[in-house]
Amino acid sequence: MCPTIVNNVETLCAVKHIIAMGGAKYAQLGRPNNTGTRIVCVSGDVERPGYFEIEVGKVTMGQLIYEMAGGIKWGRRLKAVIPGGSSAKVLRADERFKLKQKQPDGSTIEADLSIDELPMDFDSLAAAGSMAGSGGVIVLDDSRDMVWVLNNINEFYAHESCGQCTPCREGALWMKKITERMLDGGGVTEDPRTLKTIGDNIAGRTICAFGEACAWPTQSFVEKFPEEFAAHARKSMPPPLPPENTSRELIEREQIPISPLAHDPGWEKAGADAVI
Image (cartoon, rainbow, N blue to C red; front, side, top):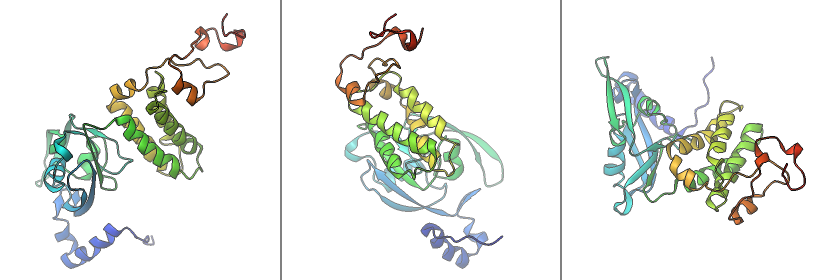
């Protein structure tokens, strides 16, 4: 096989050290099966955001946030972390993670870890339900509205979709429209489930991995913070009858007109007043 063209800056930076040290010596950096170093970018609600080079797995999430990045801003509390760029699934600060960790002697132990104890390596973050991804660590404090955070992410992916694949082209924009409407006060009770359903129908159904990238945030945020999404989705679900309610109507109306025809016996039997 022919070699590929590698233009990742982090990879190119490592080449010099691998050649100088030798592959075996370089592989002693980090943890078993997670060797070498990584450059992580810490952003969000921390005192000292920036780039940090770490040995893979030798630094925990807590050390990265509280020691290297100076802790949470303004003395607030940690609420969540996106550990591998915006497409990585979000982790709650109060979660516990049961991980199997490989030891230097080849043995494996099972550990019950908090988010602060979570090693910053590929295997550990994958076992925790997320991924190391690009190394972009986004820290969120307890002042953050998770629907707002997801909408910010959704706006990015809706804009960046190339539009080739229907699930991604339509789904990314649809998710963004829903979270935007929820923030504006037009959320209906079915919105959280609709968001998850859209994400589920994008992931695995596109040519490139952008589909998963835009679906995973929605899937994880709705799952991890159901109470916040429910709080933004309190209006009645309008019936699936023409004429449809516009987003503006859903936002401006205090009460959403409902009809028993939403489920049975069906709109085709309704009169002009949507009643049987």
